[in-house]
Length: 90
Image (cartoon, rainbow, N blue to C red):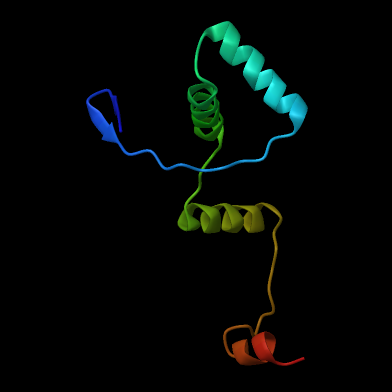
């Protein structure tokens, strides 16, 4: 257990295979910063994941609809009345 900002975190142990050059870089930075490698890896993963854009399914669908409008994409005029044909027929 780790106490961080008054929040209780339970750690889950995991195993990850790293290429030797990456492991050596982590080892060098951990020694330079005087931190355990595990702590450094957690911090780097946290920073990297924080930078990634997460998008909900709804936001993804809205982005897709916006792209369709920008590209002026059109489906078949009879799509709603022939949906089964378009989905299941060859």
